[in-house]
Length: 100
Image 1 (tube, one colour):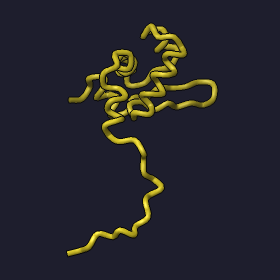
Image 2: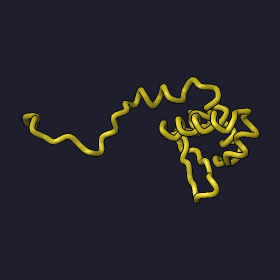
Image 3: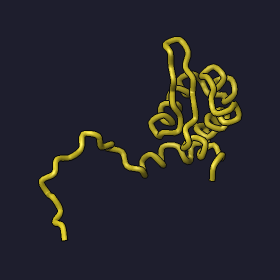
Image 4: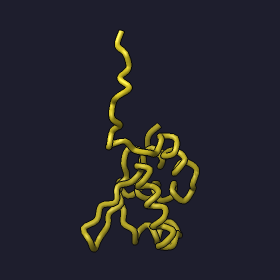
């Protein structure tokens, strides 16, 4: 039997958010679902300009929701300075209804 090592140093890589927090972030917000569904309809990637036009959200509302989706692991925000691409992750595909 091995005793538990109580003198271990905590990991610097630990994420303070729990899995439950990440689930709550996106699951029930219809605006977030609209964003990921639009991206899914476009092959898993889209742009901010397209999302503003297709979702009916303002640029500031979209910014807030994209950040929430990125923090929740549903999208990756890929930028080269002038242009930004929004790419769905596996979790985003699931939220959009692509995987069960």
